[in-house]
Structure formats: C-alpha cells, structure tokens
Image (tube, rainbow, N blue to C red; front, side, top):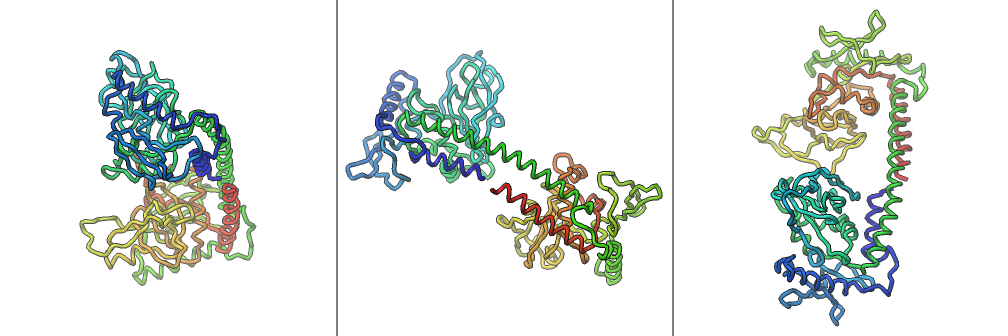
Length: 525
C-alpha cells in the first residue's frame, strides 16, 4: 500500500469539504475571515503590528455574476476566477495565507530569558509533527536566527528540506519562546480563528509543495521558497468548527496509517531476512537439487583458462597480475594467492562446496574494468549518455536520468556495456549490482565496475551472489575509505565465489527470480 498517496488522498478530501459532514448551524467562514481582519486592524492600533503588515491583506468574494473577485487595500478589485482551483462547500471561503496569519513575526523578550533553540536537524520531516530543542538564553540567539513562539508553525524554506515536508507546530517551548535555523518561515495564527493544525496539513500537501518548488529562487542546491509565495498562497477555509472536525478525522485516520506503516516495516524486515536466507541457501548449493550429470565447474574453469591463454597469445588481452587463485591448503584451510602473495581466507566467505562446484574469483572467469573518468579539460569528442552508480539498482537499471559526457572515438569500444555485462558499484552504495539485459549498448563511467564474463557463466548468479554479500555486510566491511567508501578493483578481485556447474547456475537463478518475485509482490499488495 502506498501510504504517502493515501495520506495525500485524505488531505485532498479534507480541503474539498468531503472528509467530514458540514453543519449548516456553523458560523460561515466569511464571518470568521472578517473577524480576523478586524483583529489585525486592532493589533495595528495597539502597536502589536505595523500598518505595513496588513497593507497587502485582501478580501476574496463571489460577485453577482457568480465569479470570484479580490478586493485590495486601495479599493481596487480584480477578477481571479482563473486562479480558483475548485468549488467550495457551503460555508467555506477562499483567502490568501498572508491575510489570516502573521508571517515571520519577531519576539520581544528579555535577554536573560531561557528559550528553546531548534536547528533544522531537530525538526521532523514527512507527515510527523515533532521537534526537539536545546536550551539557550535569548541574548545568544535573538540575532541571526528565526524567531517563533508557542503554537507557531515553522516551514523549511530551503531545498531539499522544503520538499521533504520539514514543517512543524512548535510545542512545549521553554518559557513559550524559541529561535532556530534561518531556513524557516514562520506562520502565526490568531487565537480562535484558524487552527494551526489545519494550516499544517495544508503546507504538507503535494499541491503546496509543488507550488513552492515552482517559485524557487537562488543558486542550485541553495534554492528557497520566498515569503511572497506564502503570503499569496490561495487556500480554502472551512468554518472554525469544521476545521476542528477535519483535524480530528485526519488524526484518527493517520493513526491507522501509522499502524499500517509499522506493520509494513515489520513485513519488510521479515522479507529482507527471508531473502538473505534464500541467498545463503543458493550459494551453498542447497536451494535447488544437484544433477550429477552436469558438467563439473572444474571443466568450465579449465575451458575458460584455455580461452584466456589463447586471447593472451593473440594479444587481445593482457595477463592480469591481479588474478587470484583460491585453493585448499594441506591444513584443510582455504587460501587465496595473488602473484607471490598468499593469505588465509576469512571464514565468513568459505564453506564446504557441493560436488562439482569450485571456488573462483571474478578475475578467473571475467574481465573487470572501471568506466571512464570525466576529464572535461581533455575531452574533444562527442557527448554520449552514460551510466553511473545512481543508475544502478539491485537487479535493475534506471534510465530516467542519464547524464552525458564526451567520449573520444577510440574510447567507445573500451567503455561500452553490452548485454550480460555485470555492473557493480565502485562508489556510492558500494557493491550494488545489476545485469545489463538489453541488446542496446551504452557507455559508463568510473563509479562502476564492468564485469564481462569470458563464456558460459550466468551473470545473474553473480549479481545475486553480490546481493548475498551485501546482506551480510561483507562488502562495506571490505571497502576502502572512511567518509566515502570505494570497492576497489584489488578488493573485488580477491572476493571468492562458489562456482556451480553452468546448468545449476541457470536453475539457481530461475528459482531465485521466482521466489524474489513472490516476496516482492507481498509488499505491493
């Protein structure tokens, strides 16, 4: 179940007046909006607001021709029928967000007062309405930070926090006041008029987020939603009593959604463990029955070695000095030898093999090569689309957002991916793998290892094997780097793989495909 879509559907029903029944005895929203206007004017008289704070407030009404009009402070009127997205239920009214709120207010409190300090990481995202805080004295945070008070709404204005719905109602603030990240807009409602919870759900709607994104300004990666978007945002206002009924209904339904999500998370964990167990059985030869008539893997390895030697003689490939040989020593322990270097293999990798299976490394049976490194200063060729690590998913290639770079004519052959090439992430989510299963060809860059088998190996078997290693946390443990991990070619060349006969490779892959499809379909139900 897509719980995000379910939440959006509930919110959509709410603002269309279809979530709870209307009560004809409720005070109309138009009266409520008029009361807000009078309260704001009184606040100006009392010095709590400045005249400029209300000069852009407008009145939206339906004319005798049944069209919507907006009246401005200078008395001018404009037809805004084209802006109205849908018809309202009886008793509801349209308004601008700025007309019913105070946007980005300032606190006026003593310097020695303790308050809450809320940086962006302390604000929840998504559909949660929670935050934590630190305690500071006002004099340390009153300058250079955003001001807010108890029950104010905070809305992240910078990407990607805005799109991630980092918005919250500030609650349980120390002494009722706070300050925080400068990347917030603050909405303050007037007591007994517009529910801050109703507005919070408005700002978490897709329509609000999408509208804000369209107004983004600033440099790439530092784009923000401006105050004007908030003040001019058009929203439907129910009667006050209906606002409360809507909030109660949303909270009730969303609690059920949370239960569904918790159950789904538990199910996801169960399925993840089931897949890991199935993969463990597969690589140990316990998932499908062995067939004694299958050609032994040792024969396959010998055939590959002979083919490699012939290619070396013909000058088509060079002898790879990194190639590792896995063998069992006289002490019955397994070792890997690379050139003159020999070391014992960690017990995490090794187990007793079924008959007709052999241990090997990828370099025994395939050629491994990283893609092209981008060097714009030297590139004079033609731009081509290419794959990088973000395009590689487990058992899937995502082609929706391909980047381009220049490849020289003599580089095309070297950096081309062909059908049945195994792709392994060198960076990013290291070890994540898929098989290029298309007759079309594509280029790739150096965040990916291309594993091209010499012959008679099923690349999907090795993709699943990498998935097994990932499920055990082995790949990340092997990778170099502290902040950014890298699965180097040297490391990849030393990882052992249990090699079944080719016929059994096919049977294992077919069985894994069926089982994983069934498990994934459970989550989609």
